[in-house]
Image 1 (cartoon, each protein chain N blue to C red):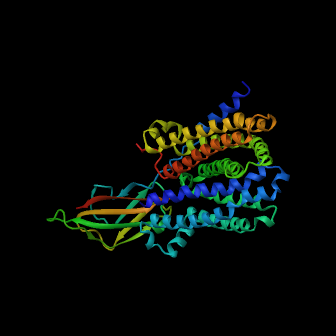
Image 2 (cartoon, each protein chain N blue to C red):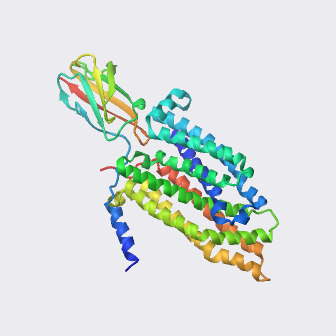
Image 3 (cartoon, chains in turn green, yellow):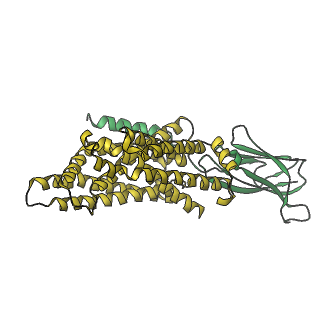
Length: 126
Length: 311
């Protein structure tokens, strides 16, 4: 019994410890949201599950469709990108409000775990 | 392809850094003071150290180049010093790399002039342990945040150092039992004594490895996610690692309770051949070393995978 107690206490302590969700960087949300239809948009904000390594961040905004031309070749929209203060978000700001059409955002970056990850999503401006 | 390269470098770094720390520490815990001063034995054990340090410096440089390229999403030949400098200034991985290079430089300088300095093994072991500990930032422990992250990294560093003492001792005993030399009775007797001296140290290493391994497992996977993890490559490779660890324990137990007494007895009983007992011990140690290297290869691989598929 005497020798059982420390082991049991250690096991309990171990189970109480937080299981850190150490995972690769991924997109957890955005404004506008993926597949959303919005109006009067000038900037796109991407939110991530963890801090990104700022110098590794690459992001671009392209237009993939306009009224009367549903799927045209991607047209790059010049946009300034800025990391959020907490390092977990990224905002792409276009020079002027986006004209109606469909847009695609592509991002890739390395998180604290050093893995380079990336994804893309679309939204529509009406 | 880049992943395979990164994985190979991780494996080589684990192995080489563990050997530096573990082999330099070997005389300190497994040999008596008088035996440590034996110049012949000293040179057998310390001879690999300068080369291991040189290899570690080269591997660490290569590792940083490959990591920079993979983090920036560019080819290995497209990186420039500015990218490395940004990475060092911006990330913990970069700082850890800088500390590793500094520790390895210290170890290399001391190792190349080891014969002249009686505290050299201590210095190399300490520098090697620091260099090894910096590797925790290249795995899952590097990504944990806050207090949990600090506990995780401390536990991971202890895990690596305990493993280094164990693997370094296997290497030390194999060097003492090198084949191809006429079996010197005095050397064999010394090996048997140092195997006995290592026994409690080995037990401590195993306990430390098991405890810190459980802490790391809880931090990365978590008891609640074991079922999901075992369905993923991470969990399966981890399970293979545990089987190999059990095999190493069985071999270590055989060494301690069967082969070491046999080696010792071989000197007292006239009709037994010490060389045969030495061969049996060497065979067992080689198997144990291979299992250890296989574990490092697995860790180099699954340390880069997601612990389980998120729901």
